[in-house]
Image (cartoon, rainbow, N blue to C red; front, side, top):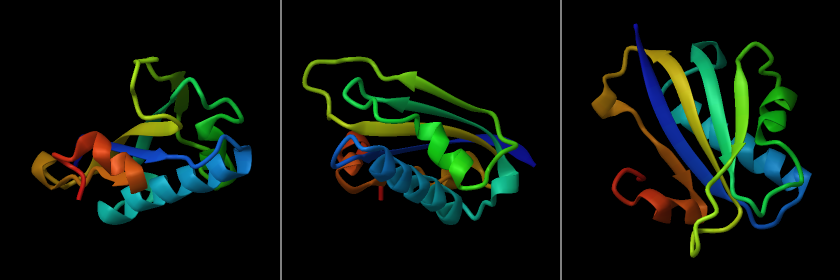
Length: 120
């Protein structure tokens, strides 16, 4: 079993706690599903949010989803001029037998434009 890192991002339509929770849960579910993972495979997750998001912590959505034994951390994304607004990114460390080349990074909706090289 190896430790791998999985990236993901989603752009929110609006800065509201309920909407953020829904979108973050959808992102995490997609990361797990596309990589054949379960919550037990999670080691830790780092979240970043663009400076225009302040209605809630992205990690709160994961806690409300029932994942209570995984270390989570939230940080603010760099405020770069012209960057896509209202984006939550994640970096999940997981235990998996997948080789690096088979890891599916997940960029939902408009966030797919952030990494056209790796987003399906």
